[in-house]
Image (cartoon, rainbow, N blue to C red):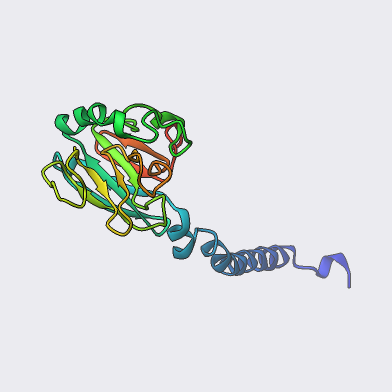
Length: 198
């Protein structure tokens, strides 16, 4: 066939049409692949950060979130609760939090970024039970008379103060764990991400 018999316009049209149809087909083929890239619900449950609106927590109130399938306590501490942290210091096993149960940014008297808000994993360091929140008003014989509030594990009798520090002579060997967390803003707590990360 001679060059004069080739319709160049038609050839360009067919080439462009074939390219366009191929691109659309590739796009449809890529959709399932791209949809599989975000983390699954299972992956989110195993470690994705949890965001909490802390503006609705009343002073003295505890809320419980779930991160990595474990309870995380968030308590808005009152000035009286914060004052009790110093009062019980002599009765604690690790009052200065020397054991690495908290990130460096929570290695202080309140074991917190913002002293008003306490963030702790709600799992006893003895056998993994979940201690109960017992504010100072709750004075029970099973907790003891020298009680300034905190957490009591009825399973084996371990008790912790309002910063999650363990008392002496109880089964739990170390303080409750402070999970990684940060504040996105004044009203938003993010559990599962360290301070300084985004």
